[in-house]
Image (cartoon, rainbow, N blue to C red):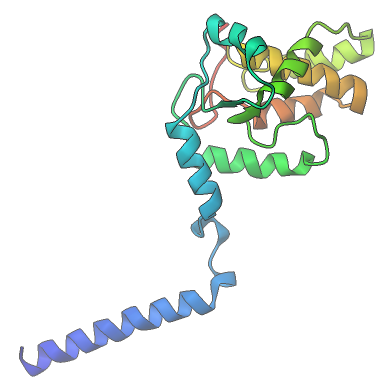
Length: 193
């Protein structure tokens, strides 16, 4: 190696070391979008590769026989999208004090799912129905899910519960349904029902 090549190698090494030092000591200056949440990424990896969820009527009917401690995991229609998943889980943190709202739309407790399915047939007052109808018309999927699978009944029941018990508006139910879309993909689905 000649003197010129040695100088170039030393400068390159110093730049790499300096850059690594800068970013390791100035994490707050690095945009959060570029600092992955390792725990969330690991959870995404597990749920996206090991899901048991399905849009089938057989899967929907099987929930009633599951232990309450079982988990309904993964997406129904399309592969999960890490960016969208992060948006959803982060957005749902706003509702962490409402125990009926799953904190992760791709990992739902079977006991909670059974309760929400049972709530689906609840009759609403005319004013409550207006809020529910607003969510049906304005959510991304034009309903609680893109098809009348188990999620439709779970999140439809959740919507009714939120309106009756917590006095949610149609806009709030719409937000919950949009953040809880479990179809996978980037979040631009259309209603298939």
